[in-house]
Image (tube, rainbow, N blue to C red; front, top):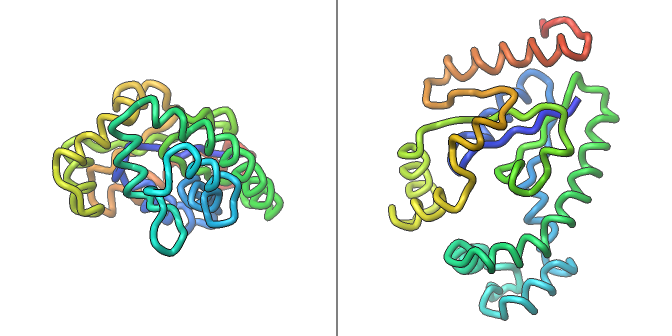
Length: 204
């Protein structure tokens, strides 16, 4: 069974993934795969340069993700052009990673993806788990984590799927506007449910 884990920026997806990993559940991160497919030498990087110019390259030849992000978050059409280049390649590589993880005979596996619904990656999973926090929390965390001002943090949040729409498509929800104990309790309960769904007893 594959569980898709998503949520808005700075909602705590990686924190939740680590909590499941502590229970023996492997995961693949779509953000990491997205970085793989635009690495130097990858065909996608060449297409991105053709589409957006050499200004999106860092001096070392790698993609300047911040420069590209400023372009695509300010322009919806530019974002769509980027997605046409990257999304098919990301899905293909994610499928290979998931197949490898499933071969490890874990109770279930996680696909961590901020764009689970927007990219169509939800079609690759059996259940969708949304990590939810208030938008004000997202904005504050994004500004602090990424070193951007509040206006840019708001623009990043606004460019993503609206919170209500994401929640409406969830099979399961974790409220991450809580403390560590509260989060751990929610993860433990979902882990129990997922193991039960595949015919396994709760974790010891």
